[in-house]
Length: 554
Image (cartoon, rainbow, N blue to C red; front, side, top):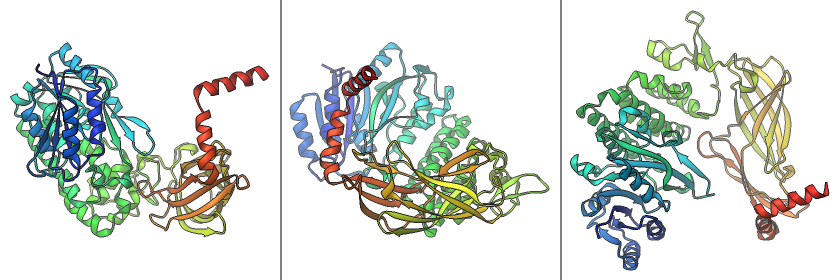
């Protein structure tokens, strides 16, 4: 019997996770499928595992490339050529499909003749299981579009794995994955969006995308190799290929939407990492990106948040050290260290100078941040740790500098406090910020982590201290930037008179925005007995019973 859908699982040296991916296909509620394992010439136990899986289920076929291609495209294309079904899907070996993914997408095809169907992607953090929906605003409701022009925002949803394609559509346009390059999904998806006469979006999850912690992910994820300059080159190369396709296919009118997507998504990913790059890397990054960025549609820049426009412009001007400062805290309401007002033109500009060209003035004008007029609780300040000294026990002495470019704070000492909550209760460490010059304050505070109100059953997790300023009966709370690097400090604290021991680590966050990071790990009896017992008792039924008992006794 001819299968209704072929699902390709691409794999390379992933013997451990391949069975999980295949099991998710064998559980599909629509059973008439073909499963093609396409192996990019693995050198581990993957061939043995794949053949064993094929022996267990006659719906599974195993293909092995004669040599490693170094990417996703070749194994997908090989499987596509061998597929027997009229509809096709793609799965990576480290991910899964929800049990009803094939049924839902195939039903959408059968309901209405379209070139492809697509659904929601759930991202799952491997280090905690937290789930979130990828680009939720684009898949919030069921709809059928007559081409990408109906919603150009879909350029942001560039995953090929969230879709089921009609084989006839792919063959009609000879649409295949470009080989020999990374970020192949972006080009393939842009082409599919533009070539499709109609496609249907459904809101149900159809793909489970497992996300490894950034620090732990290297070769497994191309996106997590942003520290490699070849990664930057590959991304720019793909953008140029997309631009050429849009022009050649008659979709040049979509360039501004596609350029906005590049600036908001692709460039933004690198921007958040700029504070952690050295000068040599920054210069090379600018050499690769600036020629391309300079050719993008002006309207694409105008659609970005102001802080992102500032970072891009500083990179374009070669003000790379300043770009590193501007990139810290992107999206977090962190103020510049300094702004300059133009007494003649009336604008307020990022940095210590008034721009000299019309374009630079447009991009570095931060007047719209309303630094001097925002309500105090939402005002923008910048709090940086300039000195961090460990003290006996679990104490930390911090010297903090606060920048107030909007001059919201009056001259004189300001009441401030560090806030830290490893649980439901909060540790407050008050101190004073003293002015050192207009718009700049400094203070020193001692944070005694041994006094943190850790619950009796312990706390496992990470917290980032916040800084609160009080002024005229109002409070402003925002994040605290740590030095970009310092040796991690680790100590053991016996909370609750030693009944709840924990190992504490104080470290820099290591990625944007670069906050001070404190990590608690239960130790001793807390880890062995107390927390497992609390987890067993912390069930909905037991919680309801406790509430009923409390209600009866009150």
